[in-house]
Length: 115
Image 1 (cartoon, rainbow, N blue to C red):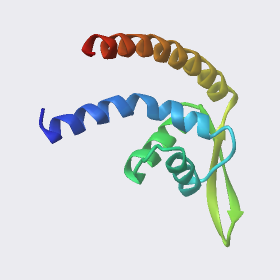
Image 2: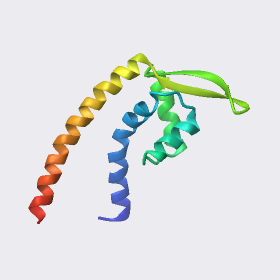
Image 3: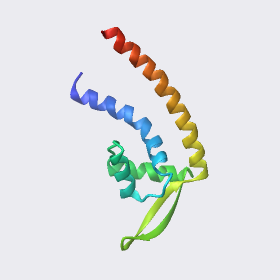
């Protein structure tokens, strides 16, 4: 497998979990840069060209609420989980945990078979 093919597969794998990561991070209000920093600190590197459109889409779907606030000398749009977003986060978290358990079992079996 080429590096380009591997990179494409990694991107596909990550794409599905970014919504969950963003929703989980927005239990507390954040503006764009602080959200990106929190995700990076948590081990999820995401560029602005991916993050900002995702946050806007989630806000349009009413999963996030937003408000302008004065902070550090300028106005910033802060985003936070809406009630609907909190419900979705709970459902997606349950789904993630079930998938993670099933996948862990499969990957554990695959690892044991190699040995």
